[in-house]
Length: 412
Image 1 (cartoon, one colour):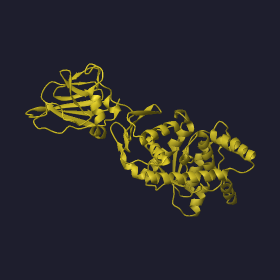
Image 2 (spheres, rainbow, N blue to C red):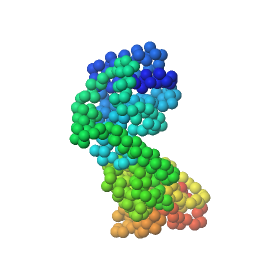
Image 3 (cartoon, rainbow, N blue to C red):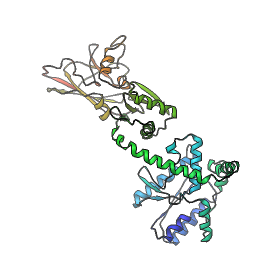
Image 4 (tube, one colour):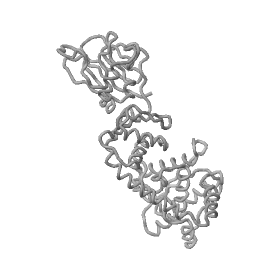
């Protein structure tokens, strides 16, 4: 309410977006009063009503996501420049304290900044440095009525418990106010995040989106300071909505700096692959054929792979794992004949240790790919693998051949 009247006083053009969470019996009447107030002042009003029974998971998080999506839709539809939120200094202090107890890293102690963005949605918090007491004084001096949210005193909500119990208890124990110091820590954390975001900027061009997932290539250039490297790893993981634990973060950073090969770190049921200074996040792989699959001319759908076989009379260079990762496509031209697609390094091809392993190691093929991409073989003998880029056997004097194209069609 204070933000509403402050904008009017300063003649800032704005619209009002209100989301009725339906947590309280009086919320519908409040929404109606807000609509009447805005219309009386000639200000556009947008309303969205939620049904809490339809929301899943953490109710507060679900409602927050619903609000942001509502705001994003309005900005796109009406061309609004940004979203102004009424968060104040006490909100910031509560966020910092909550994140501190949850074990957040230093740069993430505060998710609140005066100016920030979230998925291309610009957020402004002009009241963030102002304590709630000053906002209430402003409303009282102007004789502006406002609503009291009863959930703010309901102890079943963590925010309410912090306001009513935790922060007052801490202030009584320490004998001094803690809201201002906590909000200052939040401001410092925001400055640190801004600084680290700038430091990792040169490395972001090494992030590649793939049909398989995402990769980050730090094999030639890597942050040498641990705090910068960890910030970059967090950023990369966040692209897949992953939050690595402290132990996982330390392990990933160690293997990247050590140029370790064939390492895995589990993060929220997804394996993060580490191989010679590269990170890979693959939510899932296409499955492999359960038995050798005979190839014929035309297109074939096989366990998430699309295989296309064409007749050709010209030779071409085969692709390697980088082509397959980047484009979801690999190909090779072979002499005409009968071929089958089969398991990688399967026992029916090579009992015991496979010579392909040494070949792939020599060509620095990431280990996780070696067991994920099918092989071509003829008469129980491997004639081509799609990962190293090596020339297939019998590549000379080609008069008529076939082109085999391997593409990822979907991940199940």
